[in-house]
Image (cartoon, rainbow, N blue to C red; front, side, top):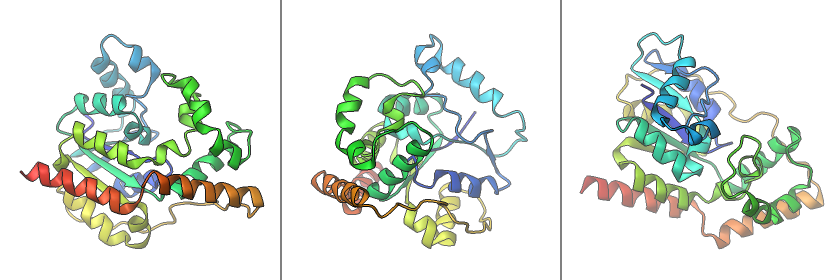
Length: 256
């Protein structure tokens, strides 16, 4: 069974992290990295959901050679508590890793990706301003082309809600929350922390650039969009202190 999940966040460095973990001889990374099992509309419609999950995972693990961990890195899992609950139900003994990134940087990166993929036609400021209006028309629409996936720029940065849901669903001792900045600036120390969490021997992984080609054109509209995003998350009180408090409280309750 798949027993290791990188469940979030999108544009947080999950691709880089999965590639680092893939270098360890005791970790097998599923084909395509992101299995998209529990967020698959076909899974949500399926009568026998766990059998659907097993079958889909089987098609992505044909090269498996008995490694201790089989890794699925599908970062949208954290964004929806329904996906998260099904993921935990599939294997209650699995371990889960979350990588958080500054929500403003994450939102900008998400916008750039959607714009390049032609999933977004508006400029960044209008995209941020009208996000909630767009999404409220698709509250239960999880098709792979849904705006809930492609245009949820600010919504995905509301980490406090997602972390609270995470620790209400999964025991804290099965969860490791990291910060993207640590993965970038303290690579060796952060990887050592991950391998300790997984109870694996330390394995040397070469630090690599996590994000490539991400440069925001310095236009007036883009500067306004960035300032709007900063104000939005400040009002929502989304900051590292808040996230650390949620994590620490969950760990304290778990220890008790």
